[in-house]
Image (cartoon, rainbow over all chains, first blue to last red; front, side, top):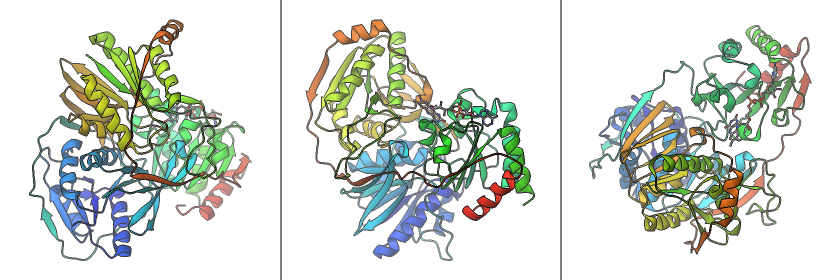
Length: 316
Length: 249
Ligand SMILES: Cc1cc2nc3c(=O)[nH]c(=O)nc-3n(C[C@H](O)[C@H](O)[C@H](O)COP(=O)(O)OP(=O)(O)OC[C@H]3O[C@@H](n4cnc5c(N)ncnc54)[C@H](O)[C@@H]3O)c2cc1C
């Protein structure tokens, strides 16, 4: 029997930061229940996984690194069928794969949880509903319990000094039903919006893509853990790429600090950022709804405020 | 090409939720109901494909009486048929939703099944994937671009590292993201026509849920948020404040 399994995501030979968070959760739960846990991972990253988990099962995907979600899920479902708890990061890939695993095993699944408590061997899962307006505690009665956790909800785990224990999956193989081609977008060296600890987000108040240099300069003084996001109209207009768009129809994020610049704070926008630990808002309209959820609001012209903040941080 | 579109009725984004006395349900009181925004775009995509390739667009919604208005709206947009899988309460476990949807879809025999990627109320993010498994056909979710050509589909799904371009053959299940296209407003003619259409109502029995809501609470309002008028020295003050109130400065 496999008690607790983390289905890992990797880029090249590295586990993704959000997977390392799930590993942290798994080792915590394994400790509290005095059980074993393991990582299920693509061959390319098995060595790093060997230094993270007490046990690793690796598998080769016919399409190499470009995971076809149905094949990924089929292999995972074969392996985790008799386990007690299966977890993944609630990334686009994580949610996609876990949804399939859930139906292959015919069990319930709770996606995008932000925390949990133990209730015997069951998890009492915390999650948001209605765009962050309601907080729910939910429990799964079927087995295995399938859960995805929102990135940045937990600390990451660090490598152990140990001799890796790595097994290869030798079970059934699965045919590819679809062809999947991953077109990597060239991105800045900055972290993904879901992974950054500080997110500076620009709205229509910036007036056009040519003014994003203001936010770029600001990021430069905030350091390597800061990244850019935007509101939906900004990405719809093509001022910024879609992957930076946060909200109901975009990404859901939970940074330590969210800085909203020239964003009105529409409900659909808030739905994607409500989990931020601290919100700083800059808007010239004192009645802008963003101020209702901001921890700190500056009423002023962003073209004046952002350079002043940049200078103040540079000089701190 | 016959297309089934799975439609969920959700509370409007602006609705202020009120909890039931036992704090296990969100009360219907004061809720304005809408079509889940992603599903609304799925209807739009379906209508476009039908106009191009022929066939019928059939809407299917699981839920209590009130979901009829969502179906009516979808018909007014231009869908051909609507089926209500009636149950006394909206299922909370998407496994149940997917199972009853799959059973109905199987009996319809369509080439394409569209759903929204996620419903904005419960954010379950799993119905399209489950339908793919249940109907034993390819499934792509989070789709922002879709093309169909002689029984083949190509779909673009943005993921963390870039875009996944999936290609495969029909029948298939596609989970649509709102960004694919904005839905039309029903025309007056569409609304009048929809009024005359029948909604096929069928009772469904849901299996007992393995997913339990133990408790709900309204997200506490942030109190003590500070709002200041920008002036000389504000920037320095804010930086000091961030240094004492957050861990990353
Ligand atoms: C179904 C649906 C889904 C949606 N999904 C999303 C989503 O996922 N994400 C999202 O963001 N939106 C979403 N929206 C759109 C949302 O309703 C808002 O329209 C949008 O968030 C507004 O973007 P904004 O704040 O950038 O622009 P605006 O609302 O135009 O606000 C611009 C703000 O900038 C301020 N401003 C202007 N100039 C200055 C200046 N010089 N200095 C300081 N402040 C200035 C203004 O006071 C104003 O508050 C969705 C809408 C629908 C209908």
